[in-house]
Length: 234
Image: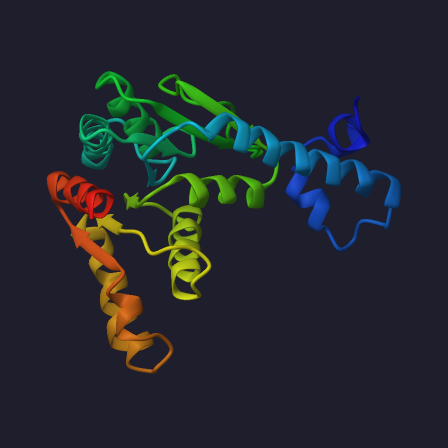
């Protein structure tokens, strides 16, 4: 059944998350009930689609990574290496680094998963996704990443990548999820962040040494894949 949330012309150009969280929107209990059902449906679809996925690794990175970027090629190599090691590869399903990892996984004969999100500036899943789910709500999508991934490989990215990275670390720190490996691929990109976390955040006592130890920085795709294999086989 169509709802105002999906078909009201007044909502063109906005997203479901924006409409749900907009404090300026008047209270409308009727349509909020429909939103609850839509949110429930997204969780049901995600759980049903991914329940039999098997061991999987999430690969995060910028949608803006160009095909001629060395990090695009590294993303392809990561996807290929993970698939060859027996993992499914889960990405956000978009272009850039996500497309690279999906491409590598698909070309290696692995399962390539894309968890897409409704955004005003991106359209559809990339062509290398074998199993794709499109979400309206970020929190439903994030749950699927954490529930079905046994580790994270993080390529250079922007705010969305940072959000996914730090949410994963926070969930481990607060013991909301079991610890899993987090590898940052590309020392030239990530080392400054690690230095700041160590020299400023850790020095101020705002995190513990164990929090910083959750992160591994490397330039080696083989090392990133090996970290995931070691955690799986432990």
